[in-house]
Image (tube, rainbow, N blue to C red; front, side, top):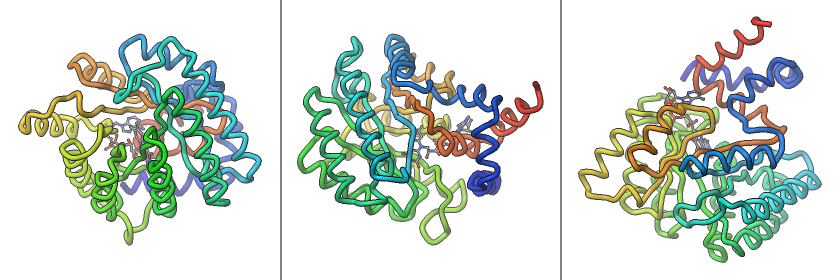
Length: 311
Ligand SMILES: Cc1cc2nc3c(=O)[nH]c(=O)nc-3n(C[C@H](O)[C@H](O)[C@H](O)COP(=O)(O)OP(=O)(O)OC[C@H]3O[C@@H](n4cnc5c(N)ncnc54)[C@H](O)[C@@H]3O)c2cc1C
């Protein structure tokens, strides 16, 4: 956790950000985690994965937009994505959908003006519900948790094609799980990718992992088609043991993994007959997403540094 926190803290340094963003060689490493710059490139990757039997969630990268105009253009891009998915030969399905969408509320300007963000979310959900296409609201840093849950619960009263994400590192999560189960809202369970203070989050990996397993089992038993989003093979084995013991069908939940990460594990789970969704990010605003992936695994950072010197 120390190295992870250090990388996340360094990533906020403007000089480092400028270097990583503008260095020509960064692009090659970025491609390992990001499907492409454009919707067309991302859809090609999504359709290829769908052809292989994976489910997909497409995410247009971007968060904490700086203006209402940027939030409007993110909405326009997402509306374009809805139309593109609906027109794809791989469109279809429900719990699991073959291709769905992930989005961050700070990309729709939640931190600028909550009401205007809610209006944009309403437009997106209304357009997506015509097909229907499921929209997952990613969870951001803890300062956004209340706002995110408030907007998701409000939106779910009107549209059933919306769900969200909870993070096992946050101390509040067990009570949020109870609430979302009560509201019949679909949850993706993750460990949490943000730097959080001791006052709100577990600081030891062991505690985050232990909480993760408890939350995942609770959601599988009582939630609506939850997503178990992790690359942690030991947690996945424990989840498998739990569902076997409880006699729960593996069709009642899905596993989710990130594009480019532990592809062997993705393949293995699919071969075992499990529903596996790959989260496919695309777009030019890749810096925050990229640095979170580096922080999760020091080996990625070494790979990145090596690539800087191997030209
Ligand atoms: C589909 C999906 C959606 C997500 N959405 C959100 C979200 O909305 N909000 C949020 O806060 N977080 C999100 N995350 C990130 C999550 O919170 C974790 O930061 C991330 O998944 C790493 O935790 P882990 O469960 O894989 O376990 P870890 O204990 O971190 O990793 C277990 C093993 O997986 C492998 N691994 C993990 N990460 C990497 C990596 N970057 N590169 C290479 N190998 C790796 C390593 O072998 C590692 O030992 C998401 C993750 C996934 C899979």
